[in-house]
Image 1 (cartoon, rainbow, N blue to C red):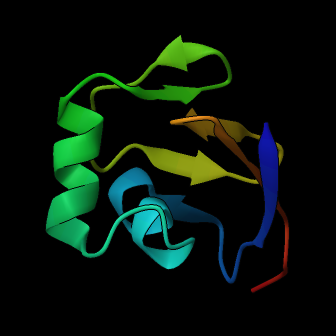
Image 2 (image 1 turned 30 degrees about the vertical axis):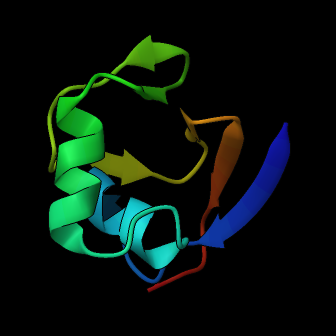
Image 3 (image 1 turned 60 degrees about the vertical axis):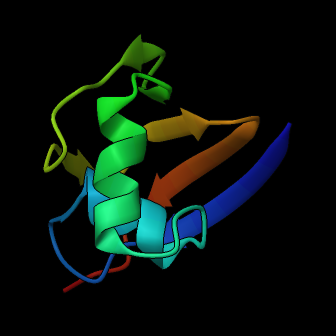
Length: 74
């Protein structure tokens, strides 16, 4: 499984935006579609809320890629 480290610029990032920012979705709309399809997991649980607030310390998995979210400060 490929692993991507993502440093937060603030307290959280919406899930659909995280997918776009890491290159797993071409746009925010594509990120929302991925989440809606049920293939995105946050901390091992399927997450269907498109704007779920992903915070430092959480891990997102989609299509064989794991995104590890790190605190980056504000």
